[in-house]
Length: 438
Image (tube, rainbow, N blue to C red; front, side, top):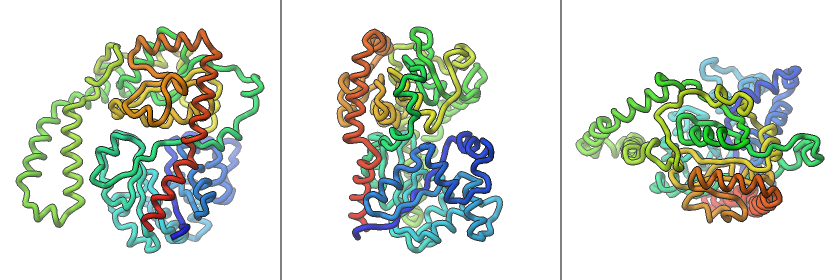
């Protein structure tokens, strides 16, 4: 099959950004579905837009459904005279859209776009669908993905975890069309540059919080990111849940192993989905038991089970609210050096989006490293890496004192990303695999 019709099911995580689009003078209200859809995609938030543009350039008919944008989706329902249940509007509208578009391929950017039982029956509910494609990026994912005809993963951890499904490793990427959307004030130096930034979730009580705390104490870093207030204080719910989970893991492991080993095999043969979920759950408990988030590499700093206070409370002038979409990319572009660290789930590998976003806009990236870094960037040439807190501080001070070198590294990183790591590069990779399956 030469070309095909593909729909990507895309969620927008940052609902505040969407609400702003509707609330700023009501500029999206009373507009058509197509106009609303275009304006939301133009914000370049959560991967939105680049996939469809690239797939269309490759000759395919591509569509992107923003399943959790309520006003947008209900506008489509109104324009198409669709009656839906208020409790299940999301699924009702999504299925109606798919049946109208009649795609050959559906790509789940987010498996939570519909209930699992609906996803498992999707080919029956939408008869035009020939392939179910699932793409997962976060290495902490442990959900059931066995219904995927093609599984794309962006993390070596996921590649190993789901190896029985024969996944394809497709790293995250950079949407280079963003470079044409920036306010030219950045290039004209009319907007103040940022010496050192961290832009993204603070993730307390993980190691990221503790490293950012040290950076706030010892550098001129500015942070833009969300904090979960439940993580703070010795009665914090995240701390409490982690303690309960730690106590329950060996008990749950014994129960699951008993069921797994003693239940009749004929039951699992008749219930393959249950069998696969049970296998994944056993693996999850085993891995969590062996690799608790609090005993991983701590980069030479002292960490506690819970932090005393939010970074915003301790450093109100240096910690700001999170930014999304084009505002996020503009902050990155204004930064001489930007900090990055992977989540605990990455476990000595690298895979996150910020590596490609920061290098894509030409910023010098100061990031932790992993066993697969040489597949993506050249260390200390295209990016700067660290393994300990001491090395992180030493390398930042060197970059601060040598801004020309930081600029050169930013340009080298950008050249590598634009050459190998754009959305189009990833779509070419996926397109080849999809065509081989149709």
